[in-house]
Length: 227
Image (cartoon, rainbow, N blue to C red):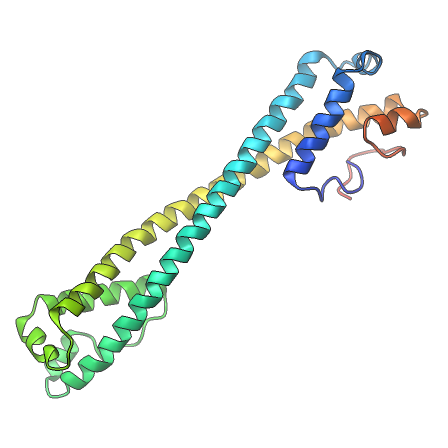
């Protein structure tokens, strides 16, 4: 296109393209010049439609980005609480069950620590679920102040956060889909306006004032550039 255009934000690109098109549409002389090169009203209106769609897709993408970020922040804050609580209860359970090796194995107390979010939540949920369904375990752990209520709280947190992980995953996938839609829309819009810019440079190659009026730099181009 022209120097600096590609680096503009999408709202800035939309603003410039609309300015460029409005100069053509609202100036009979310029409209006639473009018409002589086969540019009709329908083609110009298409530009406004493309910029409307691009801005809509951009705003949707920003909305989905904010939602994804918000969901991620909430997910991680709750996850950190679960992880801390789970690992603390693991260590206390090791002490409480040091004379009950079979029960310790049942709770996977000496299995390798998980580091991935989903694995930690699965383990925390399973750990608390196993205890809640075993009165003997509850009785032994209660002596170390690991009460049914505390185990239930861990279970509820893990269960709810696992559900929220699904919500976050959906928002993340929706965001990526909106990025694709936005980028495709931008590509189509830039491709569209590039043809009109090339036409403008051909029509007004010897008229710097007209080039400037269209918001362009007064220099000849031979093709579309990414500079």
